[in-house]
Length: 224
Image (cartoon, rainbow, N blue to C red; front, side):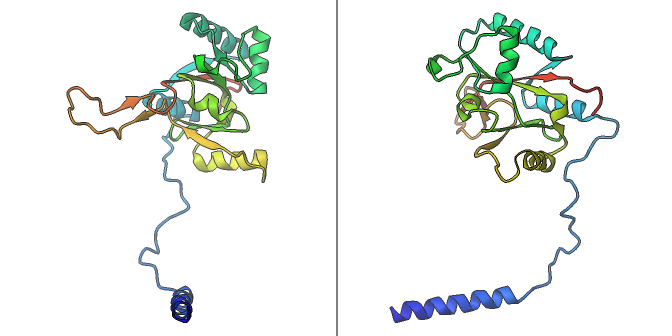
């Protein structure tokens, strides 16, 4: 026991010495404050986001207003013949209720789910990602259904992750949601072993989440 204490004291002494000794950095001129993403000149946040979002296989639907969004959502539901659509978020439910769109708001028949309809926190123009949280959406409805439909507004556009997180802090203060996730296109993986390139794809879509990610973007303002 004595030997263990002695060894511990030696280690702690070395740690204290290391903390007190400040070595000069070999990289003093590195800029850690500037944004790593470049903002293309002459391109709006909306244009930047849509371009990135489509490049990661997201499906984009522009909506001139809420009524236009409802009409296009009804067309999609009718086209896909969805009977088991789920929505657990009050704000989104209000939109569906006004349009007379039926949905499941409990866990009944969850095993038959065809699509979920949720909102989001922010849209990131720099990467085409969508920030979602447990405050606005259920974890289940963002990873379980084969199709995830998100209704968002143009005013939710931010440039990057830093702005998205700041917006989240401004909205919730110290009571941040228990789940925060950045969704970049539909679920996919490129980590599966590829023993035969001719028969096995490098990327599998829907490997651990929705196969399709469809965004209905309501234009609630005419400029970024």
